[in-house]
Image (cartoon, rainbow, N blue to C red; front, side):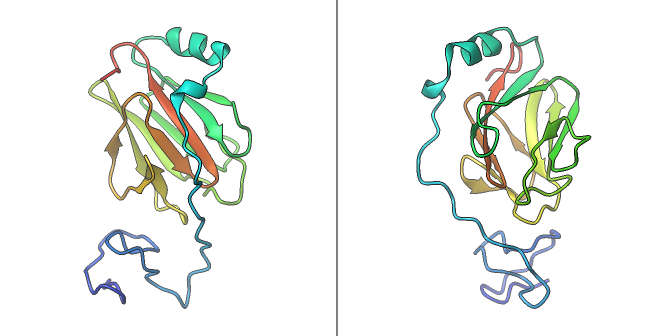
Length: 161
């Protein structure tokens, strides 16, 4: 598919051009574009309870903490090699909001490091406020945005970089 705005070739099955952000198929697309939050999310805002949870992480695991959005403060332990995040109630990372696709993103442990990839969601997945179109390796303190949710990522021992 060719982007009608910038003219570049887009091979990924996405609704927006990864180069210029233009809508690729406006006639059939009912996607709502969300504005990014303006206030920064920093790991310094962690509660003592959250700090203890991060310090107690098992080797090779990771923790996601909802920093902004519905369910702020919720925690999700990533301990399997692949963990799905989305609106489907059977997902380990269950994010119950219409801005989240049923199977929105996948967190994967690859060679001892964690990555996140978007699964052709309508609103996309962002890492540190940048839209991703391929798997991105995560580092402790990274922010992952899925719909209205902004999640802080913390790697356990042997997953830290």
